[in-house]
Image (cartoon, rainbow, N blue to C red; front, side):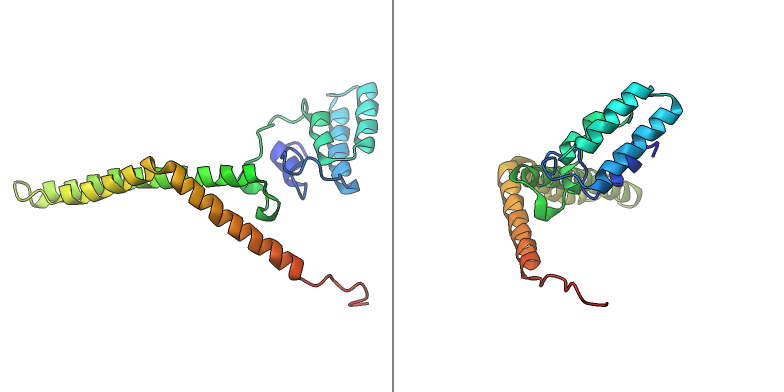
Length: 189
């Protein structure tokens, strides 16, 4: 488990994520961290006392949030989890807001690329085939610029709309989970 991406991807829920830090840690979660500690001990990055102390702390950990600090100096990448990686059903209001803001940024980036890209293409075509004629690429540029300005200027409204959309989608997923019958214990035996 030498790569941090592999370590954190091994968890069903990334313990670095504040939204899941208060969830109870399972034996499997503790085993993942203990495996990293054993690897660090074998590599000589931990001495016996440190290994024993941290191993005891891993066994005593009750929540997922208690696990990352035990290996923070052993794992090179402690980048925070992107809120998009939290399942929508478990996303907090802050996560939904962050997702909506990221969506707006992507929309703004797309509108800008659309403005620049359409300008380059249309002006190149105009210059190659119609130079000196009616500058029709201006029409395309104005439309693309208006779209970019609309997206850039309406940040608050677009983010609020996206938060509402995500909240509706989250509620729908939670209702679907609630409506699913529990698995039968004796099935398939």
